[in-house]
Image (cartoon, rainbow, N blue to C red; front, side):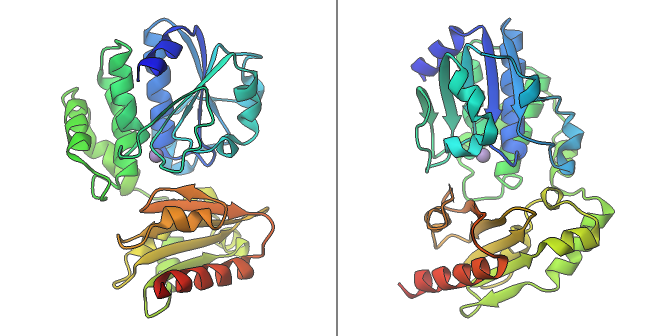
Length: 316
Ligand SMILES: [Mn+2]
């Protein structure tokens, strides 16, 4: 961590970039880092790739977009981002920066920055950032604790996934000691949906598909359905978790068709490594949760490919 602390301390202006399709870990981590850096007297911008999903609106995340960014930063700090491709068109900001660093917990991280601080055992990027922020000599306060709690709670499914370690809980305990309203934050993250999303999820639940004796559970949504329910694809949250609830399921997959590509999310119930599976589709992630996307395959072909690849995996 020494190199990371040094490269951050030496920078006056910092661009903070999370991965595309921003989720609560990347956003929570980014806002925490910006807050800490500003507290240390630095100039820091969080630069989002697109509008955030509606579910995260309670965070009042006031990041900027690429067009509003500076011409050049002393440091570009990438958070929760395993691959340079996951910066999207903000890669330009990364390339122009004098120095680059990355803090991440994806085991598939490609070490694309100058300084890479990657801890695959960490449940969330926010869990690593807690140590980094302390290492920078920045004192924890309630606002910082809220951002980090959102980051960690989201990537652990409210502290119920297998990635939760004693360290995760100790970090969460330190955050709660700052007096944050963890029940409110958890409700906003996990138990609150717009009515249109409720109806859409109900429909999806009624048509989960299973293959290979129920070991693969799948939810497939083509682009016409998002229009039909009046919900944007990004506002649906992790619908793959609906499939994952099916008894007997080893691997859950969602196949979603958007305007320009087909997106996949994978979840494992423990036995199979879906990080490796996602890499076969050009994606990546963790053992238990991963994703991929393609703009060169049709929705139905992608669905068949998922069924075939999972079949191979189960037969090995
Ligand atoms: Mn994460």
